Image 1 (cartoon, one colour):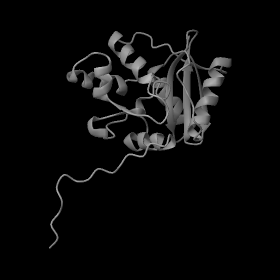
Image 2: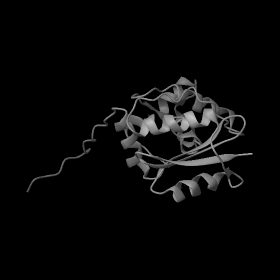
Image 3: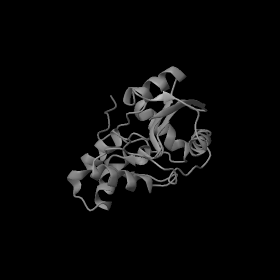
Length: 183
């Protein structure tokens, strides 16, 4: 049985879902409580609203602190990744080790797992399917060369940049590959 809870943060409305094992879904901020609820239930249609037990209430409090700009560590929260692929589980475990204010790349995570450069695409797919964003900090995983890359949360890459800025990470604007001519 999955339960879910929608709550407000400084960045918008988030949703969290859980079962008896741990957190099964986390929805990054949406503009309304209804939007956050819809996004949680889109993947967990059988979930029912519920009051968070103590461990989940602490996760909610941690998310509120995070979006208020307070340094927060999510690595200790118990997750239930269900039937995720074994390689995705390895990717998620590696991503959870990327701490506050740090970033890595898809390729670096692939290398950390002993995979070749072609596995960077798998890392990207795992990040795009991350069911518990923030608890598995996919926003800290960048494309090659420190480029922002994609982000499937509401607001897309702009949300990823804002989350990194909360952590004190400011990505340098990329210089154009070719300058323009002044006439």
